[in-house]
Length: 298
Image 1 (cartoon, rainbow, N blue to C red):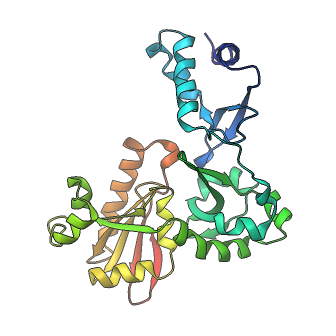
Image 2 (spheres, rainbow, N blue to C red):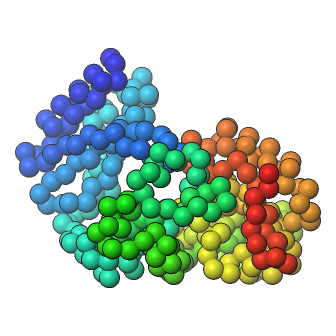
């Protein structure tokens, strides 16, 4: 079965198993780092917020599924577990004054996302692009995100600079940072246990910086004065390793020369441990406490 035949058979079988008032849409979607995926959404008259389920992996893993019905069952289970059980009024999205408190930023790799950046407002920073999204809370179902594109800015009559100014305030509020020692994370300590064992990181002076939802947490490096506070806490300059778009590894720096060997480590991890869409950068970054400036090691 070819991939095109797989998509047609999948949609046909799903329609048979869903209620008559349900519709299925399949879209070719540009994701992070220039990756195109086929996203399937299931919509009904009872709910207007539905998860996008990417089907490419189902085709790649098709030898592990006995038949197309098994794939459908897994997709429908994912849909039921993640769909909103209610109809969400998203009319506020057209009103900037109402939506602005739901807006946040995240960082992606600039070079790997040039095609995407043609259609979304962004701010260039080092080798990153700061892009923006709306974070919606769904009752009992977590969160949904909507990437902000250029049409939204025209609708709201604002600029990318104004959007960045707004999200510089709202992102830390919506997604507070979480800074923990690597040893505490690996041992499964709670925040309280980590506080009671303050010397636990001595043998492993590495730290994880993300946010409490572990959602696009690498952007915490942009939070006002945060790197300055971490540097003061560790009494050292900082070396920052971009472990993914969701988190950073931070180490106290003894010298900039450490960065060279760590660049090789970051590249290796990106090639062997991460999905292509999770990669942030192959570079290492240095925060100088004296200059209060973050720079990219090249």
